[in-house]
Length: 285
Figure (spheres, rainbow, N blue to C red):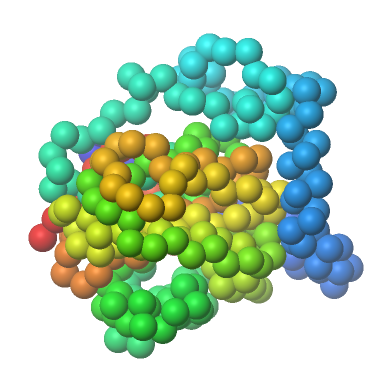
């Protein structure tokens, strides 16, 4: 599929009444201060691991208009088992050209330029790479680079893959809170700095050094990556999220990759580009 044919979503589209209450009212933010604590997500995760949680599956599928024909036909042991379901391989199409940068997941994508101060702007808010990584030296390596933000919603496929062949250099886990990754939270909180997250520094065969970061979200207490060291192959599964929507952030160094201009234009228009795992989103320079 060509990027120009992709669906887009207005970043400023309306949020639910519940989220507007939690983020836009004083009383709501008092409740929110409790909900974003990791122990709440751990508690919900345990509930969703129970066999009785299967009762929630049918309603979730209907409410989110999920086409189950895309996924393996299996009997799920719990809601979390369903949530991290596997897609049929024939329903995820990868470009064969290794010079093409692929999407690691099904998501809503935006792209941002990292400036000479290692800062990128989202909806008039400044995000610095140093705070994102808790590592100034590493952040400086991505000065003038590109930040890709892949926002996964509850209806998306919640497994993600490696975008190239390469080697894992290091893995860092950072504890934090668990705000929703809906755009409404960006207006008040620096969620990529506050939320629990895990990032992998990788040396890739075609795109140089990259960082892939998985960011936890409201009720997403578990980021399950398969390995913390060694070599990896393009298209192989890197990991998965359990229960809820979340985000993957990819940092690219300067002059390594040209991101498709349609994605840039959509971001400038305050729109997210809907992408699928394996689709071309840029090309090696």
